[in-house]
Length: 295
Ligand SMILES: [Fe+2]
Ligand SMILES: [Fe+2]
Image (cartoon, rainbow, N blue to C red):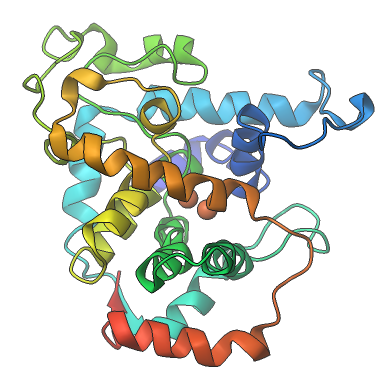
């Protein structure tokens, strides 16, 4: 973000969430795990809870500022991968520099979330590349460490350059987006062709696209779809944007859908026993990934 923007606004106005996890907790509330016993009423967050306002403010910023041009700018900036290079295991430490403002005792660090996701996938006997996909899926959140605001790192993703689905959470805030009134962007197809396939569609900028681009030569196609579209809830949960999809997307949807519950429902207050798991994961990373990772 340019220094001038930072000077004009307070930290809360740029980054309303106490942590990136706050967005994920809100997604979990929207899509609770099926067949779990309902929480006692008083455990549900109250609508007057100030944390709801931070989520709302987060989406207001996200929907207002994720324009087609903003996405092109960020793609040009980050997909050169000329920011940093480090061994894969150091990259996890780097990601863990993202610390929460919220309670440090109850929140697990980013690596623990990655490990819980990959361990849940492994426990269900899925192929090892999917375990690796779980382990890497949020690596793109390092964008925050390069100074990107929360609304350009997390949040439900959506296509830019065409009209917005009203199934995206808080759709009313898209009226603030400069693209909303541009005739070239505000039809259902916008700049795209019917059935062009998601690979030809630019998504709002965030950690999904960034990690996909980071991993695209190393993980099988099914895993790449999981990385690239894991926050595209309007597609994989709501079935929207069918007019942009091609046959390949239709085939890949089941993999994205398979992945999502591991991301959303594997959070557990007890961290996995890393000492016991280390050997397995070192071998797994060495099998698929190069020695260093580029940001
Ligand atoms: Fe994610
Ligand atoms: Fe995640």
